[in-house]
Image (cartoon, rainbow over all chains, first blue to last red):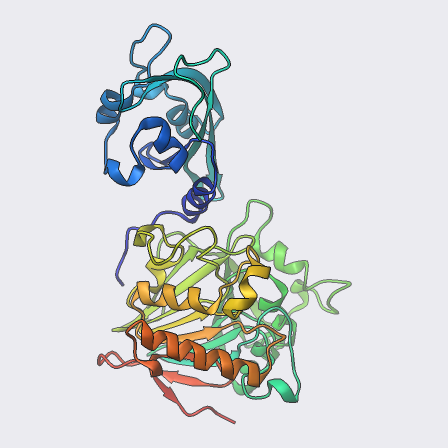
Length: 141
Length: 296
């Protein structure tokens, strides 16, 4: 039987939903690996997901951050998406993202784990412009 | 492997003179494996005739349920072998965090919907949640995977020797997705159907009907064709016909499907609409599963 690497249905449906949203949204698999972000997130980052290719956490961090209030990179393990995947609990944080044009966006991130009868499938995170503002105007959506 | 369609209709039985050729019974496909092992894919009203065909001989069979919508389980209490003590039945189906498979089926096989309870069935019946990994029944390897429909729903792939059957009767892979552009790993059900000798797939709606049924969990003709093309299935049977579709209407859908399949580069005889009691003998010689003459 040919075994094809196939994303779990829950991730497929999450991606389909995210594709229809105008809110920046990110999707990671059960291992915490980024597997998709939507068009709105691509506008925020300055790079469409299709253009990004496969990047690991380290490369992702060097490209986009995120950064804390002091401008220091936030460790991968502390990111809301990763916390949501590992704990099976929602996670929230305020942080900064740097887009490819060098602009910094201050955002609030809410991450929700995707839990099924067979365990965790990953997590989805939605980004909102911080109420404090990001100095670069509202996020393009 | 031999495959026989005992019920091709979706949603609700639709008997009558206008549906006599494609049939009015709801989803059920009989599968005979290379060692003679018997499988029933779903237990819609079509399983009643499957049961009759088995006669009175002692029977051991596996029933693989895609999900528990009524059109896929309604025939269980009319399946004659279930009322014989010499019958052994293993019922497989999707897990749910809400309740066990047995308890969920018992909601139907219990008062006031049924005159009998599960515990009263004379046969030896057991219930098993489908594992996430493949398992074996006789000479076949079985794999189940969640697919896009409403509620916990599985599709199945059965590999027996060098032939394979993919059964995804209730499926809306195009919901929010462009099947022609999406990467394969992001297409619901793709790994089940890839290179299948025979794909039995949801084709409930004509394309012009689909906009009024987005999110209902079923496919339009063009979606089913796109899915089959991406999966490179060698032969595709469109299944789960809408109960409002007469034989004449389905003939029109079949003609459209063949024409579009040919436009996609496929052989027009490799796509068809499922007809009740149609039989397929799957061979691994490179030829598509040859349709055997439909029985009476």
